[in-house]
Image (cartoon, rainbow, N blue to C red; front, side, top):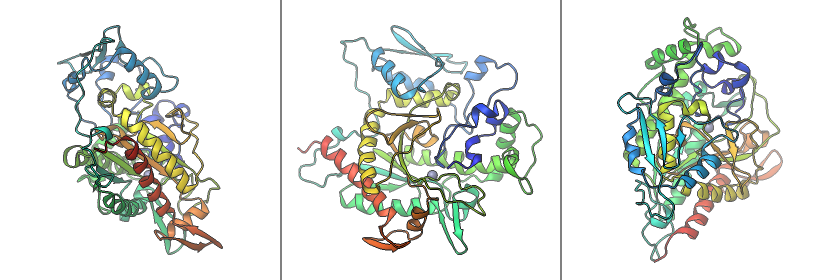
Length: 451
Ligand SMILES: [Zn+2]
């Protein structure tokens, strides 16, 4: 959503250059993007900079990446770095590509530099082992339903329920009616779960209700919020945003600690659940998009309605200066997650475009890059699609404040057609569900072994 406050991301952006950074996240209320922590005031110390962590990030164990030494040729690395993981017009990255190896500064004193040898051309590398399964590595079907053995985690975006207002995912154009993105995404996940299970899949929901997955609450994060504000050059912030108008709200401890809660801590908690408990072959993140609706007490409809699907990539140089982000990007790249994620995303984009009839959203900001062959698929570095250690398909269909879409979403889920605004229309949620199911069916039909 293009509510102004989404454009700012973390307040760090305000400190450095307001003009340059406000263009960050385009639509996605999604915007779980790595916070642009934080343009340092004064002269940055490059070594200290490379040891920095993203907000609430954990210190990576760099030696885990050593398992990938010799697994990828230099040419392969350069191609995927250039075409997917870097920004389209990137500054030089904070690592060095030599003839023989990738040299990565870790930011940690114990092992200042990680050296990952490239695989010489013509030599076979040892296969990379991952916790997730590619379509081709799943057991043969032998006549069983198409999605048998496939473990899919469905991640309903946001929290919803009583948290929707704090999350700024609550939309109402009339007293007594409202939509909450977190409720819609959960409803979509529950219907999708049934359909995928009927096709043989093992399906887990990353959340089952409107309770936060994280045990933390905004009050637990006030210290971190104060630190973010102090780092950004605001050592004495207002505690609450009550009575504060406009973007000054962003400079309050309350706003920052709430954002750390529902956006950052929540996604980290989901990451723990995905990576340590569920361990799926694939995560599907379910969202609904929005265009700027202005003042939430008097929202505006938008004439626009669109769809896009995100895969992980497009890391900015500033993001890669954070050691956890640098580590996670390299873990995905060398883990070859994109080799499964990209074709899956294209398949789901094609089918969802067909079932919803939505046009492609077009990013005009540098934080996302369009991938070839499909107008709906963009690469973007979001917290969720970075830290979930398996392919992640991140869907952003529909503009919730598009008038007809809003009315269809108010009607929730139904089969067939119903009369809305003088027109017989299908359920937006049913069309969403069918899009995901059809895309998965097409992909696994083409890539699974039968016997
Ligand atoms: Zn969302």
